[in-house]
Amino acid sequence: MKVFGSSGTRGVANEELTPEFALKVAKAAGTVWRADRVAVARDTRATGRMLADAAASGLASVGADVDRLGIVPTPGAQAYAEREATPVVMITASHNPPEYNGIKLIGADGVELVVSDLERIEQKFLTEQFDSVRWSETGGSRRVEGARRAYVEGLLAAVDREKISGADLTVALDPGHGAGSLTSPEFFRKLGCRVVTANSQPDGHFPGREPEPVPENLGDLGRLVAATDADVGIAHDGDADRAIFYDENGKYVEGDATLAALAAAELEPGDSVVSAVNVSQRLVDVADDRGATLELTPIGSTNLITRIEELQSEGESVPVAGEGNGGIFFPGYLLARDGAYTAAKFLELLADRSASEVVAPYGGYHNVRVNIGYDTDAERDALLDAAEREAEESDAEMTTLDGYRFDYGDAWVLARPSGTEPMVRIYAEAREESWATELAQAMEEKLLEAKAEV
Ligand code: MG
Image 1 (spheres, rainbow, N blue to C red):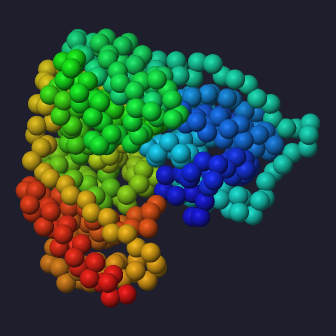
Image 2 (cartoon, rainbow, N blue to C red):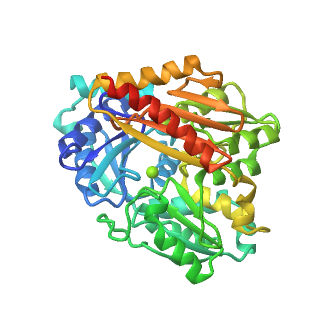
Image 3 (cartoon, protein in one colour):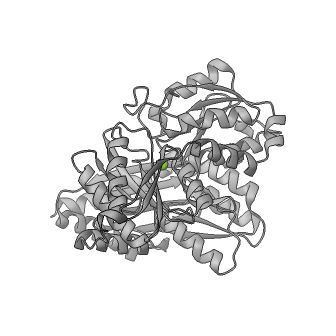
C-alpha cells in the first residue's frame, strides 16, 4: 500500500500530511463507506483541527453528515463508532513527535480498518473516483458534546470498579499532554483512586515531554511516583491507546512484563493469545503455563486485529492480545487498544499485591535492540540476504513470518525490515544481558559486513 502503512497514514503536518491530503482520504473513505453519517475526531496535536476540518469537508462533499467529536482518545472514538454504528475518521499521529499528524480509519463496528478495507479506499484515493454529490445532497455537520464523558462511563461499566476502589490506590498519571489528558484523570478518580498528574494539560506543542511513552521521555513520572508515594505510575501516548507503567518504587516496568502479567490473569486453558513475531519469552511461558495457544503475526496492530478476527470466526476464545509496546487488546471489551482500560486491568491486579510484586515473575529477561540504516535498495537487499543466509545455516528454530527470528531455547534474535523507516531492526532477548547483547551484535556484524560489500 502506498497511502496507508500498517498503522494508518502519518507524516509531518502541512508538509506530507496536508489538508488537501486529509480531504482526499476522507472523500475516498466516504465513497467506500457509503454511510449517511461519519464522525471526525482528533487528538491534541496543534494541526488536529485544521486536518479535521478538511476531513469533514471531504465527507460532506460525498454526502455524509458529519459528527464532530472534538478531542477524544482513539479508543474513545472507537467506542463511539461501535455505540453509534458510525465510522470515524480519527486525526492522530499516536506516539510520533509533535510536528507529525496522521489519519486512522475506524469502521462502524469500532474496529480499525484492516488492510483489505484500506486497499479499497486507497484505490479510490489514487484514481480519484469519488462519489461527489450535487449541492443539495452535501452533508451537514453537528458538534457532538459528551463523547469523552460517554467513553469514560463505558470504561467504568466495563472494569471491576469495586475491586479497584477497595484497593485505595494512589495513581501517578502522565498523559503526556495528549488526548488522555481529558479523560484518564477523571476515569481514575471515579475508580476511587487518588490521582496525581504530570503533563496533564492538553497541549499540541507537547511542552513537557514527547508523545512516545518510552523511559527516555518519562523521567517526570518516575519522580512523581517517588515524590507522592504513589502505588503505580501510568503513562499514555498521544492518543491514549497505550499504557506504560512504573512500579511503586518509581521503576519503569517493561511493556513485555506488563503484557505477561495481564495475560496470566486473563488466560484459561484452551484460550488463544495473539502477539507479534518479536514476542517476549515471558508471554511464551505464560501461554504454556496456562495451557493457552500463542499465535504470532507480523509486527503491527493491523496484523494482530486480522488474526484475532480470524480466530474468533473459528470459534476460538481470545481474551487478550498485544505487543510489548504497551498496546494491549482485550477483545471481550472492544477489539481496540485502550490505554485507560489496560491501566484499569492492571489496577485490578493491585488489589492484593504491589505493582513490583505483580510483575516480579516476568523479570529476568533482557532485551536489546539495534537498528541498521540503509540508503539504497541494494543495501537493503544485501542486509536481508545476509539474514536469510544466516537462517539457512543456523540450527536455531526459525520463524519467518516477518523477517528472520532465531530461537535458542529461552533466548532469541530477530532481524526484520522496518515497515516505516529505511532500516533493518535487530531485536534480541535473553536471560543474561551479555548474551542478548552478544546475539544482537553477532547479527549486526554479519549484516554490516554484507552491507559494506555493496
Ligand atoms: Mg497510539
